Length: 261
Image (cartoon, rainbow, N blue to C red; front, side):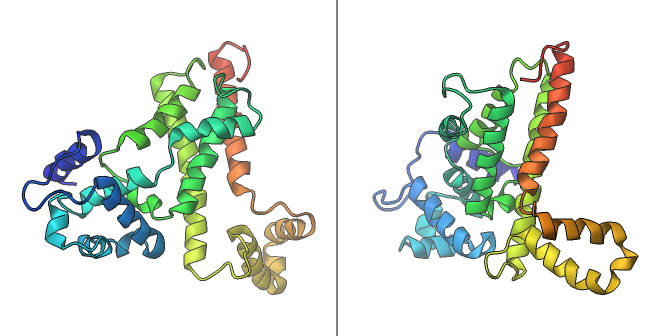
């Protein structure tokens, strides 16, 4: 983003609703514009979004749209804010997970687990968010609310501010990595019949290892075990549990051996 785009995005995301500088009586809303962009991105990816396409979706001219949103960078910022689920919905996830009353919030581990699954679900429903939420950019109230919830979960764990931030980045990075893998597998034409990425990988590698398995005995043995005992399609939860195990050890040290949450 340029400095001008940055300032415009801040005004759109954080300022009071602005009136169009010129033109006829106001007929659009920023929410409606953002949702139109979300619909296009959900169907065609972020590359399918343009000011022209959104204007056509709203049955207005591109110049009319420019009176509300200066350009695509600011439009995408609004779309991210509109597509992300309300972080307040995580309370229902905690209650459903049996982590105690929403007011109590459960322990830090339960809160981060629910947070990670909620973030993954957002990426699953709107895969283009993976592309739209990288790099230096302006984040809106809802996106900052997600960061706030994750950091609040670690409050009282004895971690420094840097450790807490890095812990959230670590969890988010794992979620993003799994979501990216699933997006790539889906985009590559795999997954026919509803197979997930892990199952697809087993099928593809299996074809090679049937002929060359003696050259890769450890891999062949692992895939054979998966085929017999199952366990694939658990990369998200398996990795999350291991990350939280590690954080639990750090929290225990910081608390002087007083438990992991």
